[in-house]
Image (cartoon, rainbow, N blue to C red; front, side, top):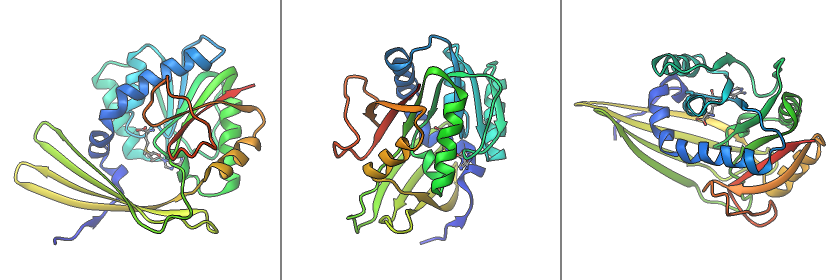
Amino acid sequence: MSRFENLDWYDTPRYYDMVFAPGTEAEANFLEQAHLRYGKTRGRRLLEPACGSGRMVAEMARRSWKVTGFDLSDSMLEFARQRLTRSSLKARVDRGQLEAFEYPERFDLAHCLVSTFKYVLDAAGARSHLACVARALKPGGIYVLGLHLSDYKKSSVARERWVESRGKTRVVCNTQTWPPDRRLRRERVRTRLVVTEGDREQRSQTEWWFRTYDARQLQKLIASVPELELVAVHDFLYEMDWIGSLDGGHDDPVLILRRS
Ligand SMILES: C[S@@+](CC[C@H](N)C(=O)[O-])C[C@H]1O[C@@H](n2cnc3c(N)ncnc32)[C@H](O)[C@@H]1O
């Protein structure tokens, strides 16, 4: 089998974007519905911490939200800015960090989906992130936070696979997550991309660590930031009619946190 070159997949934003694009419309619909159902504000200012390639930034700007996003990756930010320019959309996209950020304005809605929050590797950073979100929201504004929970009893590797095409480019993405370590609060994740463009094939892989949460650990974290109240739990299917609970054994919660 040919080798996989080690590469940060956020340095190839187009391929990342292809993999996540199919979920964008459902996620954007869900955010708008959550804002109407759970938010107590009716403005349209939106913040996306770790906005990546800007797929959600552009989609929400297209829906007339006044969007601000930030990310650590310069390649992702550049891709996001180019996409906004190409589509004649306006949004603010800055360099910034999940663990510490501040904006002069206040937002009606903020979101961080697809487990991105798990990049924050320690407890202090996680609390600081939620405190920054609370400060950034208007009273009554909501934060929609989606992440996979970890099962510490698990001993097998979990695998996910996506295959997407755009024009002449085909991307096969295989993600592998190793069993979580309860003591270290870490799980190792690897994404492998096989990209085919015409008769050229490129193989790359990225490895990183995520902080792990089970339902109890997530509840404890939320309780440590009293300005944010947990008002509902949905899941990665992004269906408004399906409402769960954090201790209901769901692996993929999407939390609705409201600023008091
Ligand atoms: C899975 S992508 C999600 C991007 C976007 N929110 C979306 O839904 O498509 C994760 C993003 O988090 C960014 N990221 C990782 N750690 C970060 C940190 N500590 N601060 C800011 N951004 C970070 C990465 O650069 C990447 O763009």
